[in-house]
Image 1 (tube, rainbow, N blue to C red):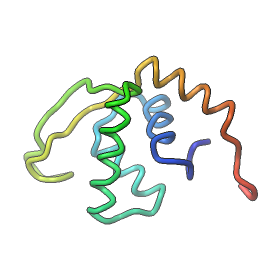
Image 2 (cartoon, rainbow, N blue to C red):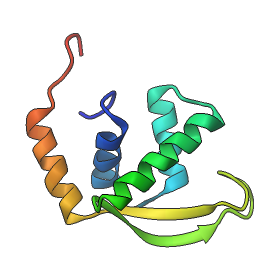
Image 3 (cartoon, rainbow, N blue to C red):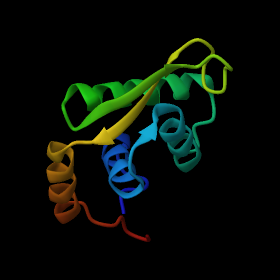
Length: 103
């Protein structure tokens, strides 16, 4: 439902439906869905995750260093999960966000 909507809405939906995920997996999924393949967009989307976490809608549950470079060598990988605040906001968004014309 949130596909094609603002990234931060989609982040909440992904974590709500798929459960806790590593930032690298969430970013790759968003890059594929939104057609944003470059490293620039990878870093922008990763920053969006940090902003959503800073707002309290998601939180970190695990951390490790990307030693093999599968996402960005020697960067911090974080596993995120949605918080109750995030669930509440997502449920509110679901009642307000409608399909675009032609979808």
